Image (tube, rainbow, N blue to C red; front, side):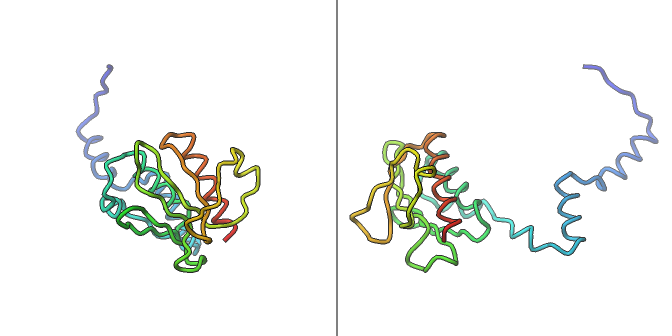
Length: 161
């Protein structure tokens, strides 16, 4: 690999300026704040709370993160057997989704009971849930295709609160 020789003066200048360079994300964030639209940035969510989920399955944890980051107002609660997702515009007690802990790399998901059109539930996998009148049920594998399918269902449920 070729090397470039830099004078001591240039090294000193780079050292002094180095901390002033902004990443593209920093520039965009600063411009949004300066234009008075800080509300568009939302609150940054921490990864710390994901450590409380008592499951050693990377795909499951990644799914939980992806659902929570769909909307700044989505919050989740870790329970004994599942992770529950809530949105302030959905009546408390009737959450957005409940996702059971994985068994053999599969999970049972209970979704807010709404009518999912065929173009959203294109695999026609959502079932009525005899367990509760407030939810519908779907079973998915923790693979990329099923996770993407579930995320599309949850996005639709969020749009149709």
